Image (tube, rainbow, N blue to C red; front, side):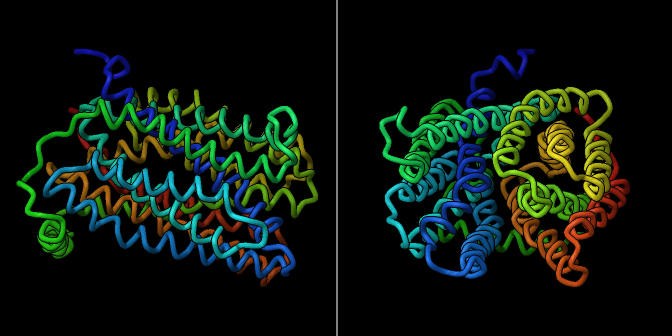
Length: 419
C-alpha cells in the first residue's frame, strides 16, 4: 500500500492548509485587529473599535455556523465538495485582497471585506475537512490530518514572518511606510492562498455522490430534510454527540488562548515586539509537533493523544497565573506550540472515524459549526471574570473549567475501531 505521504491527492489536499493558514495567521491573528484600530478606526475610542470588530467577527461566525450544516448536507447528497471548496476560497481571496485597498478611516469597508474573507475561509474549511475522507483511508486519518495542520503552521508562519519583515523594513520592498506594508501584506495573503489552493483544485478526486444532483435548492431542501431526520435520531449517534460537546468545550479553550494570549501579555506589561516573536515561535514549533502527535495518535489512539493535549493546555493555563516575564511567556509559547496543531489534527481524525458512511459533509458541517460556536464562551468567561474581579490573571485561569469539562466528557467517548 502506497504511503499517504507519497500520494499526490493527499499532498495536494494538505497544501490547502498551507494556503489558507496565511489568512488565519497574518490577517485574523496578526495584522487585522491592530490595523483596524490604528488605521481604519482612527479618532474613536478603542472600545468603539473593539465593538465594531466584535460585531464583524460575530456576524461572520454566525453566518458560517448557520451555513455549515446546510452546505455539508448538499455536498453529501450531490457531491461537489471540491467545487464548493474552490468557490468559497475565491470569495475569501477576494475579501482578503480588497483589504489592501481600503482607505484610512473607512472602517465600514474594512469590516465588510473582513467579513467576506472570514465567511469564505470558514465555509471552505467545511469542505476541506470533509475531503479528508476522500484522500485518506481510515487507518491513515491521524497522519494525514496531522500533515495538513503541520503544513498549515509552517506555511502560515513563513508568510507571516515575511509580512512582519515587510512592516519592519518597508523600504527594502519599495514601500513608503509600515501602513503600506500591512496593506501589501493583505494582498500577498490573497495571492498565496489562491496559488496554493490550485493543487487541491486539480489533484483531489472525490468519491461518487450518494445521489445525482437535482440543483442546489432541491439538494438543499432534501439535504435539510435528511439533516432533520439525523437530528431526530441523534440517540443513534451518542458517541458523536458526546464528542461534539467535549470538542466544543476544549476547543473553545484552545481558540481563546490563541486569540487572547497576546492581549494577556500586554495586560502584564510585556513588550509587543516580544509577543509578536512568541506568536511566530508558536507557529514553527507547531509544525513538527503536529506531525509527531499524528504519529503518536496512530500508536496510542487519537483519544489518548487528545487527552494528553488537553492536560498540557490545562497545566499551561494554571501556570499562566504565575507568569511575569518575557522568558516565561516564550516558554509557554513553546509548550502551547507543542500541542496546538496536535489537538486540532487528532480531533479531526478522531471525528472522521466516528462519522457514518456517506455522512461526511453533513457531519463535518456539524463539526465545523461547533468549532465556529466555540469562539464566544471562552472570551465571555474571561471578560466576565475580569469585570467582576478586576484580575487578569484570574480571568485567564478561568479557562481551566473548559479543559476539565471537555476532558471528562471526552473520556466517556469510546475509541472507534481502527480499520
